[in-house]
Structures are given as structure tokens and as C-alpha cells.
Length: 60
Image 1 (cartoon, helix red, strand yellow):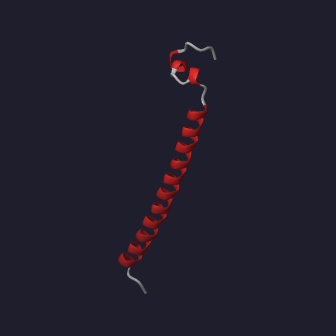
Image 2 (tube, rainbow, N blue to C red):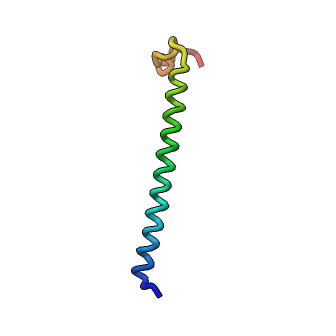
Image 3 (spheres, rainbow, N blue to C red):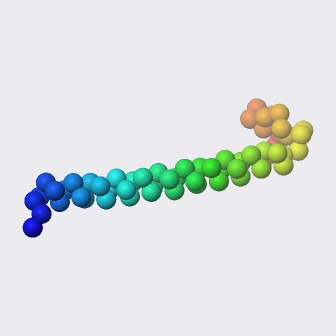
């Protein structure tokens, strides 16, 4: 039978591996979102690409 200390060490290793996988999943998601943002930014008409929408000069 494993000691409680050893058992908790195994549990911690499993938690670390799960967190590492979560982190990798989040990195991939962020990369996909950045790519989508870049594609949307390049598809924007030049006249709207000056951030004028932030000043409220364009009607909604």
C-alpha cells in the first residue's frame, strides 16, 4: 500500500499534467483567435482601417 505522501505526489503529478494540457489547449485557442483577428483586420476596407470607429465618427 502506498503511503499518503506518495499518493498525493502521484495526484499532484496528474494535476500538473492536466494543467499542462489545459495550458497547451489555451495556447492553441489563442493562436487561432489571433489568426482570425489578423484575417479580419486584413479584410477590413482601408477607409475603416484608421480606427475612426473608436471616436464615434461613424454611425452605428
